[in-house]
Amino acid sequence: MTDITPKERIKRFFNREPIDVMPVFSGQGMVTIQAIEKMDVRFAQIHTSAEYMARSAMTTAEIFGFDAVIIPYDMCTVPESLGRGASLYENADGILYPTVPSKWKTLDDVKIDSDFMTKGRMPLVDDAIRILKSSSNGKFAVGSWVLGPFTMAGQLLELDVLLKGLKKEKDKVEEFLSKMTDLVIEVARHYQELGVDYMNIREMGSGTDIISPRMWKMLVLDNLQKVFSALRSPKVLHICGSTDMIIELMNECGADALSVDQKNDVVESRRKLGNDVLILGNFDPYGTMVQMDVSEAESVIKKCIDDGVDAVWPGCDLWPEVKKENVEAYVRTVWEYSKKASPAVGRI
Amino acid sequence: MGKETLRNELLKDLSDAVVDMDEDKAKETSQRVLDEDLNAYDAIMNGLAAGMEIVGDLYDKHEYFVPELLMCADALYAGLDILKPHIKPEDLGDSAKGQVVIGTVQGDVHDIGKNIIKMMFEVAGFTVHDLGRDVPLEKFVEEQMRTDSDIVALSAMMTTTMMGMKKVVQMIKEKNPDVAIMLGGAPVTKDVTELFGADGYAESAGNAVQEAIKMISRLREIQK
Image (tube, rainbow over all chains, first blue to last red; front, top):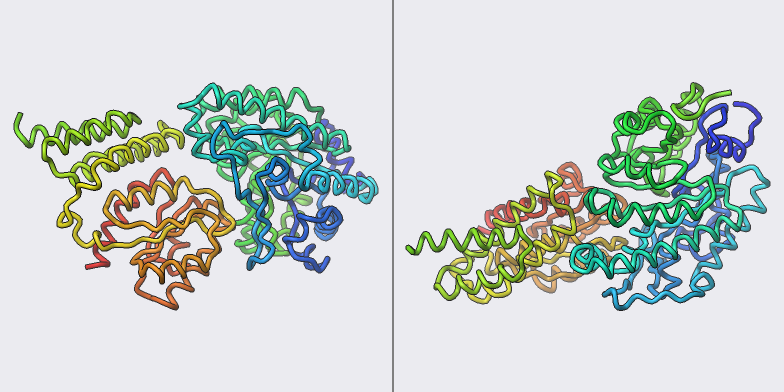
């Protein structure tokens, strides 16, 4: 490896300039139990303190040698600011990610206050981004993410109402999704104004394990195009779940890179999209980092590279209870095995 | 028209109503079953439930997706609401006494697959105690003891929340080893089911229909 800083490596990566090795980073949460224990806090506490949120991301990156830090961790910050609450599981045994306890039950219940960015934990996330920007000393890239319009809709409205509404109340659902699009743009642009180095739009509720490619084209594509045309680069589109049937549509959304999970056939996706498209992925974060032996984990990372990703991303958030040796193997394998050019990014 | 011919015609209409997501047709045909004095349980199992089996196949073939699945389930419920009060106890056999506790485990708010499994248990005549979603683990144990249910069905859509199922299985088996525990949700596999000490599983909303019907058959064997 050269003297390129992690932040510079990621910047060059997204610009498709030659780099030394693949950056090790993600567009989803990368906080681990090793950082939480080092900080002597509990998992539930890192969602309600800007200091803990920022420091847990930095500590994890420092322990393992990641090139970026990325926050927030949970998908409830926007729903909570809109009055839908957040279950933080402070007293539960084990690690549980926050969930939304009280979604809107009908489309007629939808109400979006114009000052939602000042409510709930939204200001806390802003503070955490500011802390990361000032304390990373320009070393790490600072990333953030926002749920895409369709997935955000599913966090705010009862899912069966949304999904049946796609057929039964199409006009109302389209109007609701349009409001979601505006909401997503507002939050994502705000984080970009705070200076994040890359933005990930997570549209994981829209894979073909849930809706058809036809419905995706009708209801998801346009809204994602609006989102990405409103954002500056670098910007990534992430969908976990089944994406083989929609990968070409994903590439029409205007993102600079596409992130997929272990369900995607990356070899086939690369064949369909060509070598110019940045593809990120695609190991199973729980299976690879928590369950497998370290030698199996190494093989998985190598396979991602052999299959043709440009950077090895986990398919979703890292589950915090990782095996330390597996994450170390992930980073080490990327450094050692990615010295040759990936399809879209050359090497120095 | 002979009785058997009429029966076959109405069963097909019920099945088509489910596959075509046609709640009105499901209601009208169900009412006709009653008006013609045909067997309500037969109409449910071999008409409505048979339609859901076809729906399950269409989902597996990527012709139907989750919105269609939900609307087919609504059509099934529309018919079931009319037919269920007319089921004769002797048609149900042991499942007439069957109690099922079902819920999505704590930390998980996905419940579409769970709701389809619940529906299939109701179709087959079981009494279902639905704890909803994001259910604290000990609540499954409490409810099983309160209802003395024969079956506890646990659902999780994420690998991480699936891990809570292991604790529930242990807690229930400690108190009552004869309870049949079924696991469901996308991350659940046969290996996981065996590892956790459970008795059966269904993988997703798509094959939940077929698996629920198989589970019911296995449960009837357990209960004999």
